[in-house]
Image (cartoon, rainbow, N blue to C red; front, side, top):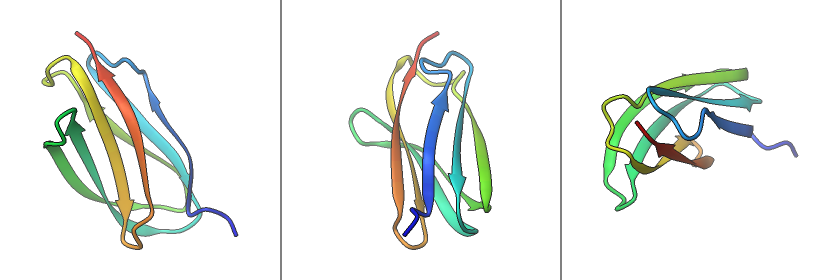
Length: 89
């Protein structure tokens, strides 16, 4: 059985003004993206639609404090992936 989401990448990392999260999906579903700081606090949260094929979301990091963050994407079935993001200015 194929995973629903595969090959997540986050570039550039470290990020200065923006970062692009991309992945491949084998189905179309609603999902939620959350950006957490190192203390687990949610910095941003947005709902979106995952489409079959390659997906991309651009994150504006220009207003974030330089630090380590965690980007998580969770679909309606609970499938989740997490990527670490380093922000430097």
